Image (cartoon, rainbow over all chains, first blue to last red; front, side):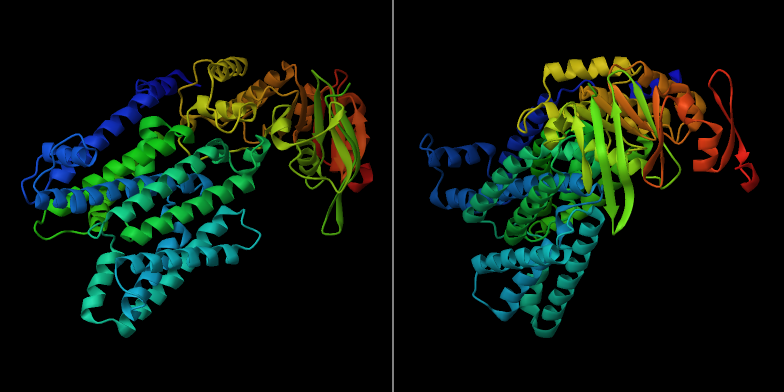
Length: 351
Length: 254
């Protein structure tokens, strides 16, 4: 209660002047601008105006571009950018939720073993040729992801309340499926399929098409509504399960709803783009500095910031080594490590 | 009428009875101390009172009704744990605001009224101007006061505290007890420190091996005989009612 410490606190109050609504609005404007810019970016010399015309033509309010240029924007660029936005939003929102549920600052959406299981499912489809084409790859990934999360739940049994146990079980199941994936790749992969598996494992937006955009966006919207319903419960968990129960929160229900929804959303996302690291880990931490830790504001703000981050990362991946494309998962990891270290340092400085 | 009462509480853990036939009552405006050696069942009794644990036998009444559904309970009874900490980067107003959660529906956020209550409770806890401070920058004593402000913000009839002074230096212990002594709520508090209990509690329940050994005013409960019997410690009681402990009791002095 000394004067010096209150002075320190005042000079350090990082979000005193910025209302939460303004932060969210600014992030939203940034996202729209980035999406337009990123769609125009790349070969072909498109402008933002061309992008607006293409979208306007679909809405019947503008003249379309020449057919070839129109299809490049509408069939290739736009779905890719929108899928990046949807996946970024879903990863960051799930990350924020799982960090609260597990009371673990290092939690991210892949914690639940979903991504490893999805990889196994996808690899089985690619290597063993169960079906063919992008759609069945996604289906395999979705099934694999749900199977591994199912295994996590079975191993947890009825004692699903301990967050330490959840983390450990997720890690163990993740390792198991990673090992199975490696086994399948090594024992039966030719050079071609190994390359496409590697590409997919790293997380890539290259094969993005409209169906994936629609499915993923719908899943993200549903998840945001569900997350909103447990936001107060997640706030209350800050001081542990007993404290949350004492505040009248149904802790078991809050945890189950949050974990199952995160796992389902992650499975859908991994199925369409593979495992893109660091978004779910670092974006929520950065957003807490902006809007505070109350989940009613944190979750939607994380979603928008996650979308911004992934759209920007993909734009970088497409252009820096053009015409060679860097998978977006590589870009997020390269950007993510230094950002994570900066955030960790700022958190340290705060105590 | 009592704000909170327990009637013949019994708790068995794996065949062992850890709380046996405990009855007690707390009235508005008073502090009831629950004291006893380690393992005497103090914290278990408190968990039953709080509704966090279901007793094997007996019942707990909040006013005249059983401790009911969790959210309703949280608006009538608040708990301060021994030392509840968090890694989440929260401001003091965020922590105190947690106390408003049981008062609103799942879909609505904090209202202007909630903000007023939080401000008022910060004042009450002597934390005016602390609202923007970050949790991680607070001392142990400040953190406990914030928890008490959060408990106030639940606007309960009953406050339950589990050894809240444990990690505090002597001055912060007194400050915290002064704060509780000024409260209108019924306060039940588990305490380790007998001198603190003697100085602040209106009434005391002394537990040993899960049973009530003595209950009444501190002067009635903290007799040299009771203290030697339950704690194995020699004690003198001064004429003003204050307690002086004199080291372990040898078998002969019993």
